[in-house]
Image 1 (cartoon, rainbow, N blue to C red):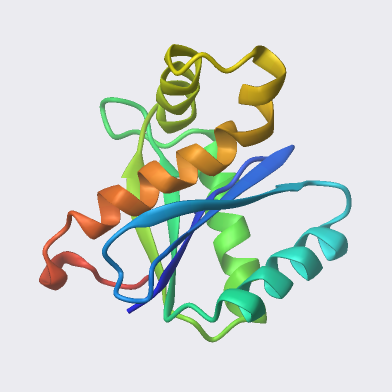
Image 2: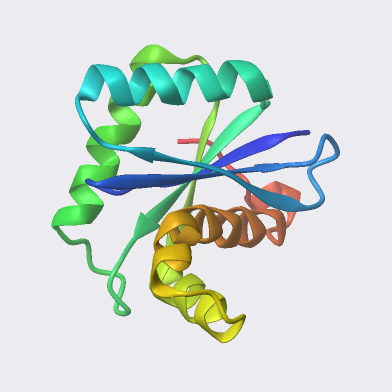
Length: 142
């Protein structure tokens, strides 16, 4: 099965996809938030191009599992996505995925500008990898 991973952000959203067998994750695109309609238009276009079997969204939580403002914003995003697409949506708890992705890119020698261009995509890769590491019986759509 093929999955599309999303690292949702209020300014930028990173997109990653798996291979057709759902074994490896690859960065795909960063979508800038301009208007809600434009954002969803571009996201749905990517989904149409990639034709995933499901969507995996990172759910940011504090270390103690508590929800924050961005957690609620991600849940609102998921509700809007589900009104626009019939694909199953899976949640993966995440903390610091963007920070850790940025650190990996910095260690790889990318400049600040280069990191900013792809950090959200790399965070989406980390989200997808976390999902792919789950046993099949723990992959439950919302």
